[in-house]
Length: 439
Image (cartoon, rainbow, N blue to C red):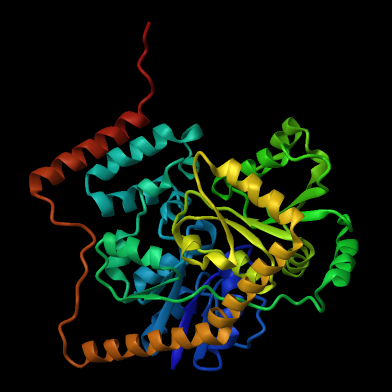
């Protein structure tokens, strides 16, 4: 089979690029993969690469492929071009986030308005007004309630099929009246290229990274945002006794936590390397004793970092919500969101920091789970089955079944359409006029 594969690719700083780094070499054992991305890429597999951003004419040949697969996430800088290509030639969508609000908010107010209207008709104008009024500095990328506007309707109508990583996401899509086939495929794991593991290797890694050799290190990894609950982790950290030699390593970029750390007086207990290379990311992951991967509220996403930590037998603390709640209880320490979060997080940290046997048991169970379900060849086999079913469906339609036509907007009565247009242009004109002279 010949597959057109649209995804952000390494060295882009996104989890989806990391996901593709592990999936593509396994897929090439089963299919002929042609990559579509812009810019230079770093991949171990030798696949033809098409820069469709600089040369959109290459999209004209997509009919030649058995399947086109589009990885869509909530990051506007890495997925906007992919969404545009998907609209031009719909195919199979790998949905990494069930809420795509920021994908459109990052494309500008016009693009956001268009998608809101595609979903809600004339009410989209009121939705945009609400979003801008409730966003700090009127910036929709800072809108605090993105889950209110998933903005997946047009994608769900056009997709040939969808691949998701959790039953939670599948349920949400079914509740959103998705009528396309939905396949649940486990999150993928990939080997982190650090030669050895164990206490001695860990001390050596810490020395290389400038980390304290004897301290118990907790780590949180990836993009730093409010949903990662890092502020809650810092709040618990300041309550821990100095007798516990615990330090927190925050690997990643995003929200600036400097003021919070200083106000809590825990500068000596927090280490912030910032964004690091993939190689150093693996080193930090193997250098820590405990991984904290909290996530609330969830946007339906899964975590490649968590699977990597589990693969490396690291004991992990997670929020018992969405996909994380689907993972076996014996593999992870799960805490509740809400009022008891801080109390339960403190209990988890104190217990795991003082009980090496408990850490070891959690880590070993996590590793067994990943080896049984999440290795690249296993995941690639599931993808191939989806490709074969989608290709068979495509050929059946081509042999004479009526072609499906998708309409982006429900029919709007002429009177409603006139009111919508009048309201829209009235606001446009009003916003362009200078304020009235009040004197």
